[in-house]
Image 1 (tube, rainbow, N blue to C red):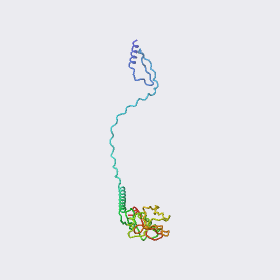
Image 2: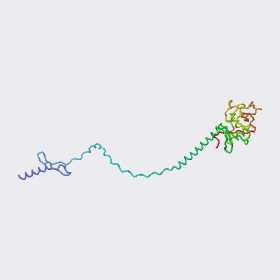
Image 3: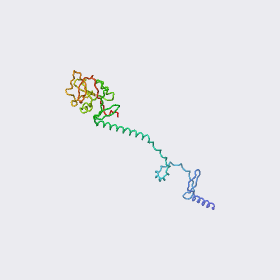
Length: 249
């Protein structure tokens, strides 16, 4: 009887002091029923499926500022010499062009100016053109045009339209070829370059043109700047003309 009582007390103590940490795989544990009697516990079941992911946590605090990096090397100074040389060259060219334009303007508005160009003396009456008439260029009308072209000019077509300009140019001269003919059609006077003579530009000497013997198809300027029609095969000095902007100064 005493042994049974001892056994019951021992089992009761086991039930009261059972560990809550769960069973260990491969072991079997006793537990107690409601009336204190121990019962046998089964083996643990299979692991259940993975649960849903929880919400993303809040961002953490910003870290402290890192240390400043090492200072880089200073870049080498740019080579400005080529640019400076280029600017000097451009400035020189610009200054030369300005000086040329100034001289050409002086020639354009300065009546009675003589300029030396390409070993020749050109005369400016102030109309924007320069002129030369040399006996070395004498010939008939066709050769007169070629002689003017050979020195970078043309036979005069601008100056003859102004008597005052022609009188400046004709100082000491007489009978010089100008660029006006009616070779293609009698009485239809055309300037070299194709423009037709206008009545307001006509400065014929008294009684001219006469077209004597029907062969006077070219024009010369007389000492007073007025015109006379003559045969184109006569020998005279041409009046050569070119723009002041074509003068090599």
